[in-house]
Length: 320
Length: 308
Image (cartoon, rainbow over all chains, first blue to last red; front, side):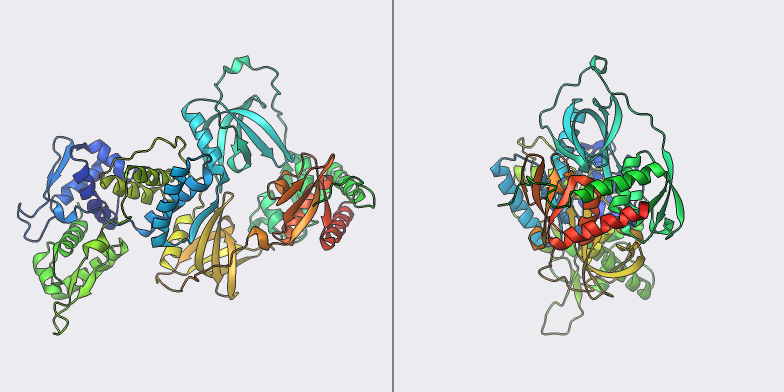
């Protein structure tokens, strides 16, 4: 993300940080400098023109910061008072601390020497900002990192993907293209061997990923590919009997879209999924039509209740 | 070109370079950019001090000689201004840079860019080959930055929140901590109206988050009571082989059998576990506790009669 404008305060912060950066990067190209600071070249030029007017009181050439950038390469002199690198701000510290959390909790198989260093660095940062903001469980990091590498190396990767609709974990070989975010979830878009088509996978549903990348094979060499189902959504009628966040979140409804007891139309690609949702709502979601789905709900309740009868499961393994 | 940023930089230089406190009149006389009436300069200086403080630059107020009632003066102590993370070598720089780069495309991208610049400005070359994978922060909620900032500043936050019964109500909170867990962000905060500590999932916030102007509005307790695995009551469930994956990922123990596996899973909340048990239909059977077993049977019968 490249910024085109900034407030005087943001510019001030950048000017103060430009000086120590330039002192250790004499002769850097304007283009690279802009990239480092995440702004356009116009913004950086404006910064340099402003910085040129700054210095110690007196403001004669003796006191002013001396900058040279006409050639497209930047050198700086006479900037001692600002030579020190500015302390990290609170949110910069938070960014570093969370990044270190991810390195530590999210990546597998780091050498112990590296792990020790990360712990030490984390302690130093945390001694300033405390541990109010942490990432405690970062299972997706490893998954993401491996897929990221597969994208960069144009390779395939084998994933174990959990489908909650069917309560199944399946091994799939995917050729990932990229990541995208929708709502609060992150997805990877990839060609899936199993489906024989491009699919999106929610990152938090990838249970595991093989750390060895596979060569990307020519897609024409694929054997027996199951064709994707071109199913139409079915329309159903239902009622929500009680305000329940679980039900609303499952159906993707915001609180304002829910009216208690009123008949609503729901379109579902999978009636099985809708039946499960009705069960999971514990009676808060009642399906009125089609009859087929009502029957399947009753049937699954009956077969579940049968398991609670005495002696229904004779060989259950016992704990301890 | 901004006159204001020029003045702020000149003020910083003057206050940083001085060995003694500079009085206000000295500042107005010598620092470029202060002009106008005495009142106008006064107001300008007050705003400038606030702005620099906002950038994390502390301006110290003191007198030349504590025995005399001199006019107070100002300076910035170099030790408070400059970065100090102890001694860092090339490998430390590399790890910190890797940590900062994990934000690319996510909420804290902008501040991590400036953190990276500062790390590079130290002038030690990054040196590390042993990590070939770079981690990334995944999806972050749009409220993430504003809430992090409120936690750090200890400022009050208010927002509308969707409760378990789907009612939406305004909350006034003292935000204590933020936890990233399994792809979601949880805010641990003191709920002012409820008078107790509560946990909020960021994606259940409805609408905007407002942060109070006042910093240090409350004190953060030194130890937070956080829900952990161990504190939860346990349920014993039977799962059909290769089924019940959402339970398996949260199980404390799993004993494999022929057709069924027995697992122990924490009851994070009674409605959560009941929902998930029913969702799994005849792939999950409750063994213990007896109360949960009874509740499951009762709820199954209720669902049946609603669809019969």
